[in-house]
Length: 218
Image 1 (tube, rainbow, N blue to C red):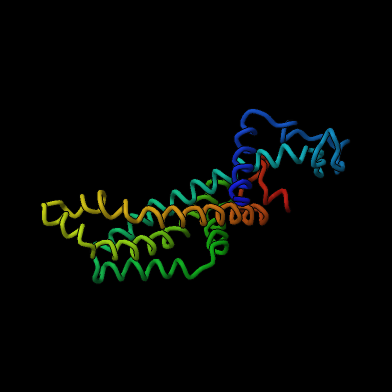
Image 2 (cartoon, one colour; image 1 turned 30 degrees about the vertical axis):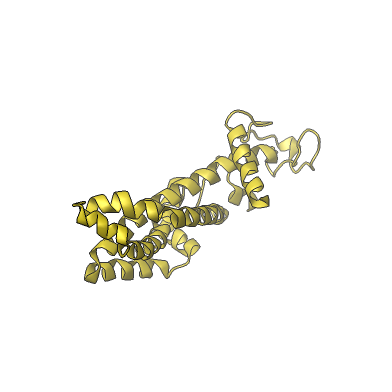
């Protein structure tokens, strides 16, 4: 309940910042550098005299976008590859899973640092880097849960009435593995926000003048 309320607060902050922030998040005023929290600036100002509350509000948008897109990339490709592996079995299944193990063997932040170092810093590359790391996570989960579903009696019944394998995957397999995928997606969504903040802290994530929680921490 407490975690849910905190998440709703962040979503609400991001939604409000689309229409309103106390000040322009990028407006600099060197005469107001490092002001303490006050009625005028609830969270004070930074080294350039920018209102910190306004930048926190705008930074929430970037963090949520990175989380959604990164999880979307990992979920889409991961479910596709995991479903194929569970259906194919044999050497193709082993090939996909061993490749997933190779990617999964690297920590998320290190993988993201490697990819953004190659592609260059930026918000888009951060989303791509984090999303690529998520693909093997969702692929392994999809394969494991799908294998158990393929053995169920209702799948056998679907085959008996003439359903194609593609139809079984869409109408029977995927709906029955949706619950664990949703749970995993919510966990990885939070990790994606932390990963983006870490990349921004290192200068590889969201670039100035856009607000970023990681860069603000830096």
